[in-house]
Image (cartoon, rainbow over all chains, first blue to last red; front, side):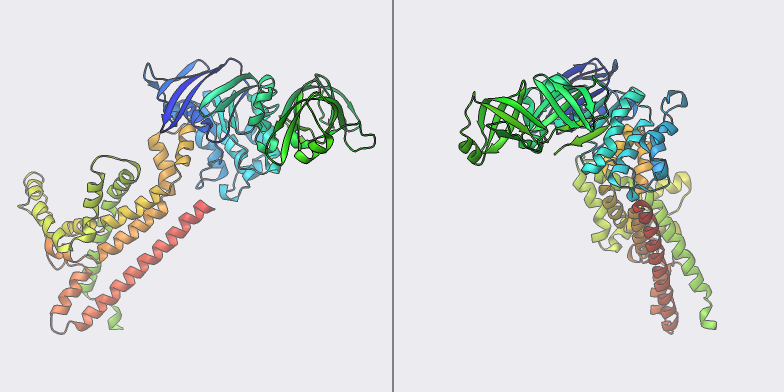
Length: 362
Length: 232
């Protein structure tokens, strides 16, 4: 599907990236800002020229430094959804949507206007100018505009970054639907693992222009050394789970070592769900608390104690898989926590984000 | 009401002024956009020199430009002789020459206005258009050009006003010929040189003010209209 091997030097910064994936679906490129994510997809789109290497998508060579092949962006048939939308300010929503569609011959169109308008719910916006749209509406129109060119491949550069939380859940479901409805592979750039939990099939972790890990999303995301890429506010542990049952308004998720209860997810039994347990949402108790609002209390063994700074300390807990609790140094002192000790992990919130919903139970 | 009707001299001067200025602006516009584009989007060796040459009319005495034009385009000039011999075209001492002089004098103003607006165009929008399947020429005409229309209008009005007021280069290059090259400023100047010319001069002065004001108002209206459309 995608075979990428690119080198690009820009001053001191060097991108040297190689990865290849066979299956369709969503591939997420994750890295801190400045890791070279946007440069990479700009090179895939043809907006930036690599110094060396090749880019092959769906068997079509778009760039190859050896043969001198470099297809111009307008001939690559790749849809690009930018972080900032980039709707044409002088054209109405309708004309923005039709801009690319009118440039491809009718028999190459496999996505219709009705499909896109229905999927994205933008029918009532057609006559408006982009300046009269909210952030979420703009981004949906931008997605529609790219889809209507019936692209072979979609690039998304942090499409949710400019949106607030409410708007994110406004747009996120549509991205999940794109691959299922139109079977278009997506290369999705994000600075946070959290955003692509359950959205990405495969992930590429990027640091300073180089790939440090790539592969199956659930596998890579739950590796303990990937925690640093969750973003500071999401720092914690990613755990793959399976839906075990549904009762009242709780869903029970089974993971290796135990069960977690989260607000109802409306998912079938057996569905795979990846959850994020943030370090700041985990507390530690020496005894099992009896009367408490915590839904998830799990026996745990202290695996390691990691000093953060003068105030905070991270306790790595083994509950069958590893999770992290971030507590104050003072709390650690008063509880006298030591590696190997048996304690209870009190989990205050489990963040679940699937393709069509994002729930944070806190 | 006799003072409200225009004399043949005045009518002729107004007609010539509008003819010369409109041609000066219309003829200069494609070059203005091209040069503004070149200066704002491309780096090439000698760019500061090209930039300097384009700005010369702004800093040189207009008479110098007029004289240079005479040397180049006069009937015995370097280019003028060739034009006359092979194409039978005479430029010196005709209204066409006046239009060229005015166009040249106004050119830096036009380029500056358009260049600023090209520099303000978000390149990201052009990139987006490319990824949607539009080639460079289509992107220019459907994205860049519509977005710089306010700058183009400003450039047009500035250079139109500059052309209306052109005096030094015009009188040097094409002289002051009634009905051919005698535009409003030249007619006004002539009136100040003859006895009893005070009233005609004052009338020409008022006419100039009215035309300039009208041009400004049209520009204001157009700019509002187009930037309003862009902002929505």
